[in-house]
Image (cartoon, rainbow, N blue to C red; front, side, top):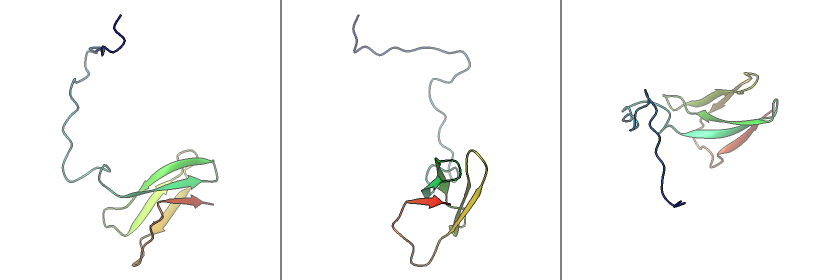
Length: 83
């Protein structure tokens, strides 16, 4: 067999091409920060709100909330720890 040959599988009900991206929404182009939730020892992305004033999110395991305000001077940090 040729190991370099790609294999394709047709699954009924699954589109062969991904749907086009919807304009003006979604999280794909929205800024995010990484948060280590110490409560459960897990990481998650937290996305900036639509107004651009804060980042809000929850621990994916226990639901603990985190809220980071966007300040006038900002920071270059992209990862934080929620304690």
